[in-house]
Image 1: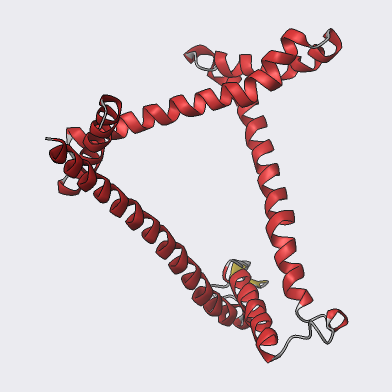
Image 2: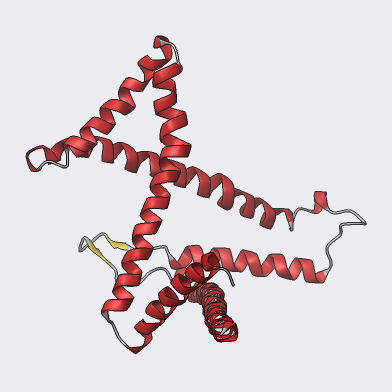
Length: 232
């Protein structure tokens, strides 16, 4: 083991032990490891932001592009200036404009991505299972395919019904009835089952990933100690 590997291995060993020390309670070593992790992550993300976003999309065009192109950068520069000025206590209201723009843009991108990337493809996939015009001798679904499509359809309807919060309005008393329509109430219970299965599978995936990471760190600690004492 050369001195570079020894320094990197020692740093990794100490940080791993500091993080695992949280298992016996909150202490200064686990907080120090968390602070180091947050600092390194912030620095890494800052470098990526400057290299892949600010430099190619803002700084480089302002330096090398013609003035006709530079004119369009007045709006982002103004938003950046307002965001910086909002850090002063007397100008905090100026930050509402760029933050509102960022929130609206993020919501629009998220909604478009969810609709066209997830909702519509999954809906069309479910519909195609019951479209007889798409069936052929080579792709004709058997009872298993029809059963899978039916379960998917029931799961979608049940999940959407679970998130339906409408109530019957009593026209005489102008008050909301405490109960939803019976059909929606039944379907919502079916949706609970599918939501529980989904959350359970997600939790199992996260738990297994965390367990694999823990095993990998413990194996690293064991190998480092073995190589350290083996060197002596």
